[in-house]
Length: 80
View (cartoon, one colour):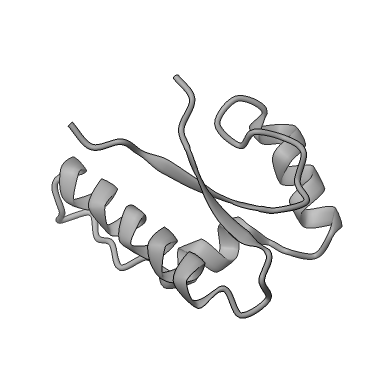
């Protein structure tokens, strides 16, 4: 079973998996627009299985964290 992750910034005090609304408001207020950035990077399709879509999202998060040109991004596990 794959452990799912989310992308966040180092300064965002909110957990995106449990307090998404607050997380998103903080993210947008600081001009990061992380969800839009992630949407531009992820290589997904409705034709992919759910597992393949999850993997595409993980790959995109890994790419953003690896490149991290602004030095602000980190990968966090989804809290269930």
